[in-house]
Image 1 (cartoon, rainbow, N blue to C red):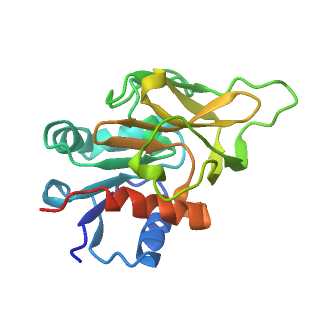
Image 2 (cartoon, rainbow, N blue to C red; image 1 turned 30 degrees about the vertical axis):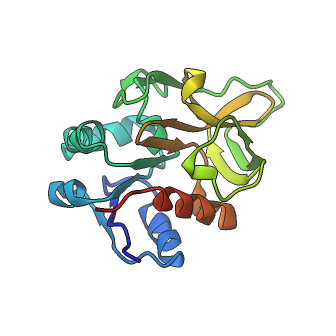
Length: 210
């Protein structure tokens, strides 16, 4: 069976090698960690990881002109992309983390700090069950309440029609979003053991290869 050409976006932040290792565990071999326009243009699927502050992440995308390259790949060429943690948050209009910073604007919404009761810890770190709001390629291999690992202090607030899964952390937290070829997850599939591997497999299985 032909494998997809997968590009993990390299912009000097994020957990790129953890994602690479997870994909290699699944047997994928046609993978590159790259910021090359030619690699991104020829990829069948893109992964946008993210760890750290929104400001640094978006600034690095601009530093390497990746915002323009990704806009063309995702919005014009309609390549499937999966954003992970801050990689998902970058898809918003803007973030309120340590100021106000413009995002990629692919899915209308904002990134804002979790508003939790005083006795509940921030960041939200640990395992949570998801509530699946609607059918999605990401969760085709999971049961009704898949279990994933979270580590974040901010969440993506957007129109409910884009939210495909949420979790309960005393409030409802956006866990996964989707709009056409654009997918994002707040949790870390690369740290979520079997559940995470199933999600990666489902995402790549959904891609039509030429």
